[in-house]
Length: 169
Image 1 (cartoon, rainbow, N blue to C red):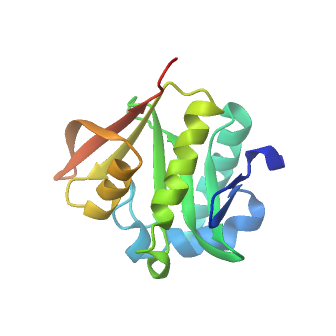
Image 2: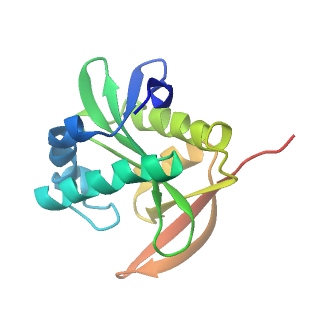
């Protein structure tokens, strides 16, 4: 990955995922406190490894993907994009280690990713999906300007779709 795809915010450094991030991603994705409410739920180490390959491939194919997020030298989480298999579009995702929550890091990282999507990658529309009872994620999505636009049911849960549409001049 080129350094042009690295993002920096006031507190964070965001790097496109690569093989060197596998251990951090396995730690995050196998932690039920971090991934229980994510699409597909808590991952096995093998599934986290498979997803890393898919995420690297998405960067190569589309110029969008997942970033690992660091505060200083400390891995704190991930954010970025996936192609939704249900046809809803390119979806913003984020997940952070429980010990890094409550300080606005998810909001800061997700906002940087969303700006990248519209301003660099040229995506006209980005969606995000959150369970209705996931108030933390919904708060982040609202704080970065995404608006609720529809809902659907999945596995007995009401899922809310948020969207961000690129503003044209």
